Length: 307
Image (cartoon, rainbow, N blue to C red):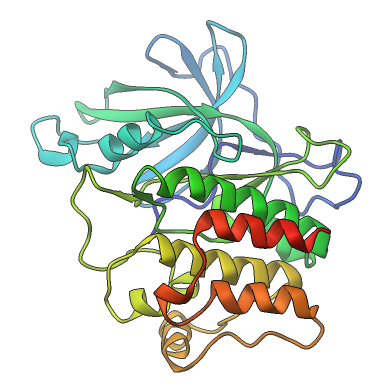
């Protein structure tokens, strides 16, 4: 499973989101004067989210006065292989060092700090802090409009084009890893940004024998134990796009039941979905990876939907 579902996002109710109600948002606490300071620079504030490998806090950059998000990895023994090339932290740092794109949450820096309680070290990434919500929270309230879906999915397809051209597979495309920044686009649908590269795959690191992505969004080849590829990312994005339009998962139910259903047929696309959308979704979720469009082709297909 992915290490994190929510990263680099301030869940904010209200301003700048008049076209979409903000669901159950929680305002993180401000950094306190006596709070821990990472690297002599980042004063930690409220917790934003977390998982088995890492957690995310809001923080104040004492050097710039800017609020940021800090992803802090679990404490490790520096003598172990966790600091090796293929550790989640090193892999994520290396991948982000090659990524600069408006539809990818930016990493501003990284470092290692001592954990006084355990006498071990903690690695951390510093990321942009966005005012918005993750797509999972948005869809929990109601489906997206076709116009919003085109804008958001086009943005993520552009991000995937950027990744795939560099030999990187995200490996965990799902609503929880897509953040929508409404403040960056106050008069539009918001800008979708991809986050959480904790289990991404690229040619510089060892690829897992099977995907460790989220069961409800795995491609058929991943369900059957195959390696994640760029085509797998497109399939997962197709499921997310369908969920945007319908408000429900394409393959609901318990994880095992959901994965088995993936091997038995294509996702059911309701008749309420426009024919042009249906054609795009069928292409993105083709059971045969070779039949799916590339990320750049997906951008073009989605662009034509907005005409």
